[in-house]
Length: 257
Length: 315
Image (tube, rainbow over all chains, first blue to last red; front, side, top):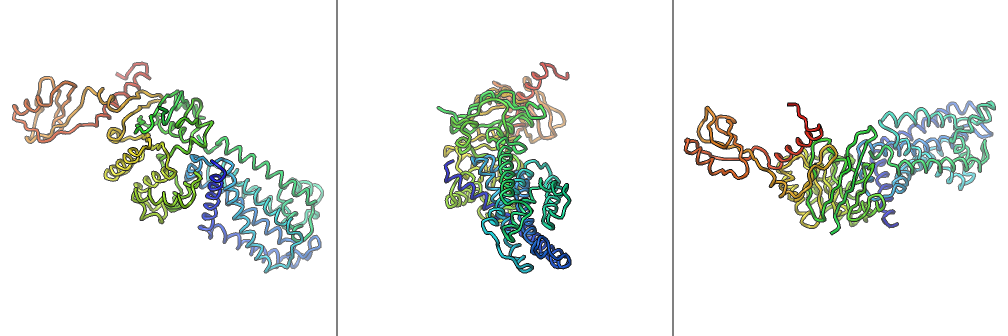
């Protein structure tokens, strides 16, 4: 395949992915919006007004970047995991496997699809959050860069989960038992400065902490950890996941008999 | 001339240690209409899976129009179109979208893909249903959709794994006509089927695979020449209460109005008619009990089974 053909293949996968999540919008776009609105109402306004400030910010302003990031993470992940596993389950992944499309294009196509949904939902949630909280952007490049990298990383993670998954239970185990705890313990609702030293150190191995803090820095200009450190960690995790996902596609593990 | 498909010493052992292919060699000439037959579990689908890279081979070399599927996988895949046994398209998508997306995976531009999709959907009688959710199509339509999808990148080698399974006779025959037409236009076709009549009427060459080995690889004509005995059913006008006897021809009474007769090479049907006529039995119609290829197929598979058991039978 020449580069023009590879581009067509990538574009085809991406369009197919976007068409899929738009077609089933009541399952893909509506629930995260309702969930986030509820978070804003309960944590931001009802409880938040009693909490006061966190790291010098009104609680609703502190929690808003975390909630936006949470929707980017869960939607990037769940789009790829459900779409790729669905293709495996219905066996239409074979359409791609018999074609000359290189594995790295398949990988990029699915990841770009996941990022489209993650970023799309993130954008809608950001617009909604403006209704509940006043905030301006402290650093646009940091905000954009971290949201792109986060979406990329969790799309990759979703693809790996889908490759390993043998049934529908396997695609809900990771989001339920890994992703949700990581997100909730990743500094979305609190500053890690509130934790004792042991728990603070333990939190440092949670990649979500770096993303939420970097994003919060981009919006509000405050962070619990150095920004360069946050970008390095997210970059490193993304790189590792990219090569792992590519290796799995190259070997045909759980895709080819 | 370079073959369309060349397989050398192809072996496949699955993770559960099942040895599906035990070193098969096979050449399919360019332009051929080739049948790959065998009982269930013989290794047909594994062979096809390896050709279209859905199954990883354990050992051996496969080349498609001279391109090694390992070394030149991108080029080799451009030459092959595959119609699998099971439905493997997204049942929630529309036929037109499925075809255009498949073309995209081969790097074909959308405008060309749309033209081809229209051509093949029309040829296969699916154009009117192009915008319906695929799940709502009938079984025969789904099979035709998979054929259209396999042709969208205009491959030179089309591999069909039981394409007419579960398809009614009328539709099956129209699919035969379509396949003959594309074969006449130069596409090499490899077909696996359980309908031996299908293989006999469509294919010029044949390989029979059993227990992971090729037990026969020859032309259809040469194979059918090997048939030294056929069983015919003769429908007679008179109601028979006991089976007539004919010297040299074993007869059995199938029911009151039909007799089965075994005819070996060199024997004459005319003798049978004359002799029955003498006995005041009038034959009004005649047909083969089984398809000719079917008789040979069972002989060969049975022989292979006996050979595999070391020449011993249960008897």
